[in-house]
Image 1 (tube, rainbow, N blue to C red):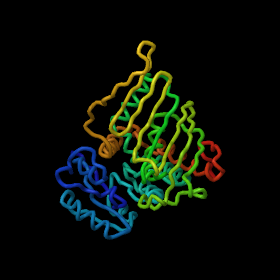
Image 2: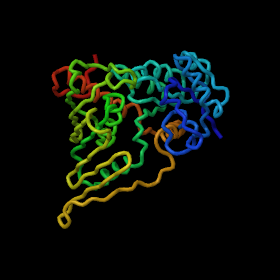
Image 3: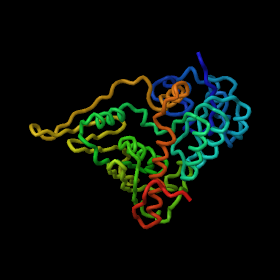
Image 4: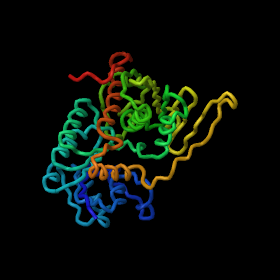
Length: 349
């Protein structure tokens, strides 16, 4: 069996969390380490974090699964000392860029990067440049792209079950309805369903953030460091999307996709297809996606491995992920300009 040497940069909860052994090898692991543990071909051999206690905690948590994990304070030393095949970049949102560029230039075959890809458009551009120049396979952890229910919803659209898709209404609620940390997932799924390049956006941030024109988050710890936002998007294929992100409403996330002959309402656990006919009017039925053996983060990593071997395109590559970066930064630019429409892609300075 071919094995892949894995390194992880950033040893926080998203990379290292482990449930008890009864669920360790269960379905849909949500930490990087748990996902790698599901795949026999993957051997985590090294981890890096600027906080020594974090790497020590990782080894204590996972040392029974992978023996002799090497720890580093500097990811560049890890890249030099270890012959790594795949590297996870699981640092805070605004710390991805320099690390990912270093990883891509180090000769690895694949990268699994936490979302969002970047918090500055210039960073996203140089990340893509390093990825493409080095022919590195990448998936960005927009986890719903490996959830069967969302693929089934998109297949309904592709198969004409609601006619031509015209509008998408996406909602994110709860106290952690933060623009970058959790909102990234919602915006990415809008792009996943629209299947087009975003062409313009205008937005308004929640009260108290009128001068929030660039990312000022703390990696997702304190919701106050990121605003909620309401926005309107237009795509090149004519699809229009409304994005409602509000910390004051109940915790929720869902998408309403409306076409010329019906609509789909989908979230993490439920998909409803509403269709209209002259005979019966508007009728609803539940859609049950087929069984998939692998989902979520494990599926994302397995896809990286497959695409390393086949040269295929991944589901959440850097070119797909930069759409979300463009939209979110376009929302901030709209706020800066007095909530006016901003054309996409953004101008590069």
